Length: 65
Picture 1: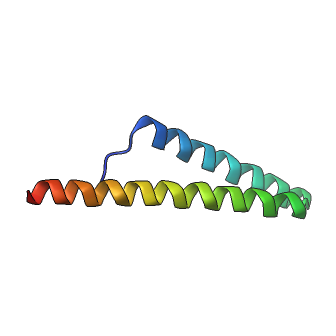
Picture 2 (picture 1 turned 135 degrees about the horizontal axis):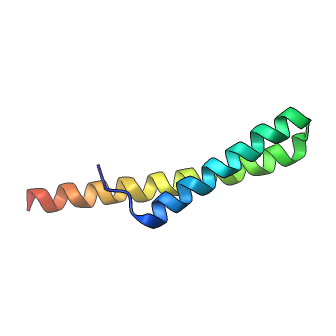
């Protein structure tokens, strides 16, 4: 698996922060805001996953070569 770089760690911290906000909003019943933040967290998580998957594939190709 690809090693996490500082920008990746920063994004994971950001996603974790958004999820903490969502938990607080859910407890307060702020449903429209929850939908927005869920979408943002999902988009960031998927972009990061794609980036890490791409790095893994590149590492595997380099190991074979």
